[in-house]
Length: 425
Image 1: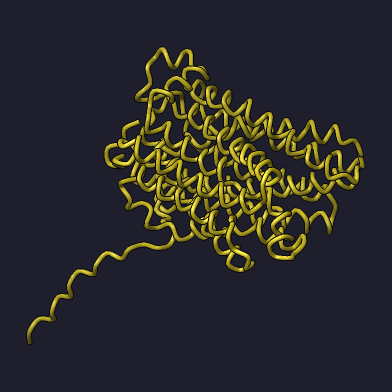
Image 2 (image 1 turned 180 degrees about the horizontal axis):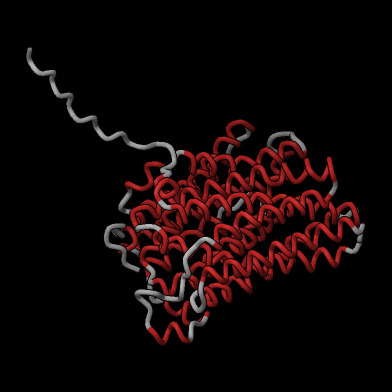
């Protein structure tokens, strides 16, 4: 009888969902990702619990707002310093020490709650110290990824990191409120402390990550400095442009401070509407991470960043014209999705094009931009809304972002032609 026909090779299916190859193939990255995801959920729970506790003690939203200021200043100051330290020491050890500090501080918050200590200054001090630990930990942790994975898997790894962040931002505050309501503030803090053990275990299992192995100049290894990192960044147009594009989005077109105003003026809603507006970009970012399988096939990553940031600006501008709540939420979600795409490629370019002995410092700059940019954007949007109208502030910000990105594309031709297969800083 004739042989059965050999079926043609099945065409390679284009992935749509997040690529989990880094989780499947690398045990160190898998442990680190799960540990960071669990600990980030715990951190978000603590952030919610601290806000609730400060409000319960003071009854003042002003004092609750000071919680954010207490964390912002250390994040900006120590973000740059933490990056320099990450380039000078064993990153694994730095991650372990800083994560242990966060664990101890969460336990300290639990102790204050169990002791019924009603002194907001103590809470502020602990929050500031937690921000210092995070600022020291974040550059070290982010610069570990290129040591663990091949360059082709970095987009998938960054998309998975974004997915973990989205899950933490959406579930952490909710769980924090639930646990505080059921068992008190100490419950959220103790769970946060327990969650840090997952990150500690993951880092403990990592190999040593000594500074600049493989490609560092010995002089740089001996004397890494913040200013040296900034000078390196200033002389590298592609890497520099990744930060400038993010600032275009976060400073020029950041509408979140206007949500309380537009909820009432545009949609006739109240606090629940404000909550929906605030949640929509996070939902879009989470969806962008879930459906990120295609990102690993993009080679023109610089051009993709420009398109993504331009899409953010366009979505914000259209949001400024909407007066239908559902449409407004859709466009905010689209903006959040575009932000995820931009973040994945910007971080991938930073990890691929920068030498290992500079990655910690550049990740420190990345942290400062991510933390400080939106705050500056809040100030700009609030000022524009007071001078003109919320509509003018939102619409004008979105259009300004598009204009800025267009100018970057015209004057930074090398960024447009950036090829992931031949990364050039």
